[in-house]
Image (cartoon, rainbow, N blue to C red; front, side, top):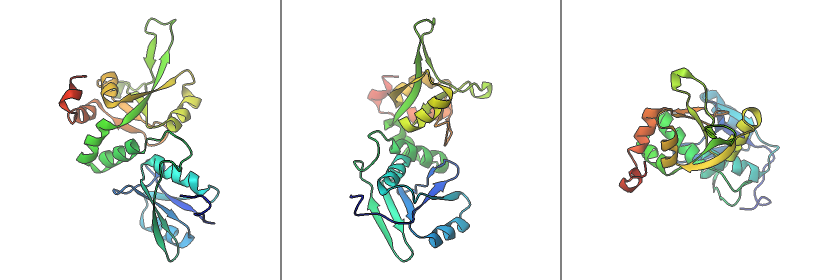
Length: 223
């Protein structure tokens, strides 16, 4: 995919209001409008979305945004033409994105998709860790202080989400990538809030147990 080959003067992405990310359908397709009229027409039909003008972004940046949200394809809708582009993991701004986690979290928590529930146990997560040798408990993990939810830990889908939070609230924390087994061991009693600066998905202890129950036998031995 070449940036010179594909470029449009007007560009509008469909954004999910709840997640503040690009809207991704069940087939993991995001939508880009290159004409104002069909974009406005869709907005009038669906009050759960917003239409965001991204004309200032080049096509590689737009592909990166969609890929990070969990899309594997991009549907480009013009006034009289619709085309679909397969998103290339090599045609993105950064080397680290975690679109699978963003997609499966949305599909499972919004649509109760059991297939996505099982796939979550294969995803990677980022937790915020602080190491301070001067403290008795020198390793600590970032959490939200909320007695009603047992102070759930924070988790992030990618470094972009982590940095958004760290710059504002936790400059002393570092990112640590973990698999689901490690995530469960750290927070199975407290749960997690994932991407607290955007989608704010809450994974309570009971939900973590549901994901754990989809693990293979050899993985369960590690918990």
